[in-house]
Image (cartoon, rainbow, N blue to C red):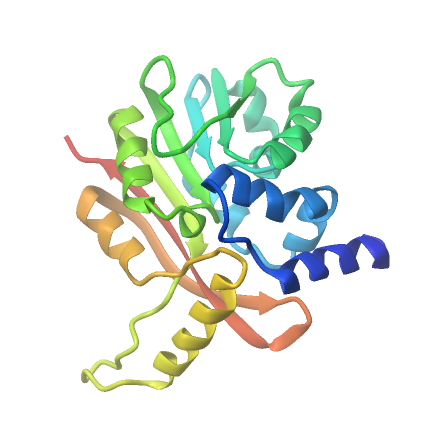
Length: 240
């Protein structure tokens, strides 16, 4: 990644996300100037994506949907398994990022790129796996997105999520810990760029699915090596 490209991304992050217009318009305004460098910069920030793909345990013939797929980068974590899937649909609302996804995935006959809202889009038939990668925190109605994902899954289908989050602010004895102060920092820092961290994601996911994987971790932040941002990896099976 060139210094100029990195500076362009940093400028977009410093300027922050707009509050004007529809969700699609806000995404386009924020990501279009940095779309070409989106993946290179975020390789160092979006942790746990390869782990999530591995935990999904997809098998040959599965039908898969990624909601909030952006540039389609996550499909490369499937490796050789990708060509064995019956169909993969990558869904996003930002046309600038989807332009990159179309170029990246054009050679894959089993992959379809869809410009649509994750809260309302439905594939033509039930699917085996749905996942979100650093997308729920960018959706104001994230519960509706989770509910929609569950609705498109066949019985016993799998839902996976990896995303930033806010850990519980209290220690084991119910006292406020240093995490409370850290949570305030992360909530403010990410909200500037239209990313809204929550303590409710994991609670909601656990209430709606049979939990198979649930990890809470922390990873480094570009240019701020002394900080570690909290994120989680969740995989659950649809309840009958």
